[in-house]
Image (cartoon, rainbow, N blue to C red; front, side, top):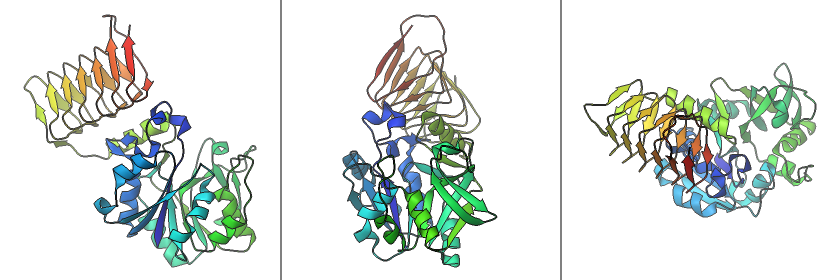
Length: 353
């Protein structure tokens, strides 16, 4: 079995962060989302991985390399433009050859990985296996209509609600899927839809099995979903201290301090993670916060936020539910306390009043 990771999307819903960065490399608990995907694939025993690239190809290549960090072999496949998930299968034909494969979207996260999903697929011998979960906004997803456990119909982003079961961004296919994607025409969105390819298999009498998500799943394409994924991952961490904490500081809850982190006259209430060589001084960092490496936080309060590397925060009272890109500077220019919610792209500079 092989794996295919579509990672060429533009990430428009995460702008301005994704104006200068691949959405698959935005960190959750200080680890790029794509790395969680690669962890899951490697843990499932799949060692040949194709990553479909778009405009952020160089950044993803630099971050992932040849795959040796995960014990896998990476093949990079360039896509000229985002043309749909079925199009990624179409252009990966030579890499996939005649083997079954798992397709795992590069911006999705699953609490329980894909080991059980892959095992069931091997046992059932079906043409395709899909993963589903109930959602409150099915119009934003490909959805599945079931009769018991039998797949009746699949529709991409239905205008009228026909089911609340969304397709999770992980699929398993036998090689017959190649015939399906070749038969497709672009949808109204101008894309080759993987939902329509699975519907094609269904209409041809191929067997489709369903796997329901038992743990959490997150499509991290929007800021609120990314912050929620960060919260969920941090809830499952254990405390680790590889940094320095002075006598005037207090840590409570689950706190991860990476190597070189320094905490001075500050209060940290986890779960949270502080990256390498980051300095927290005269500040409060609250639950569900991830602060990347080489940051400086002074005289500030932060909670439920993702702060990427090389940021500078001074006199910020109070920052919450926020997402800051790399190299952002946020400074308060007046002494009046206030609460802020920010989403700032890489190298942005914000003066607060």
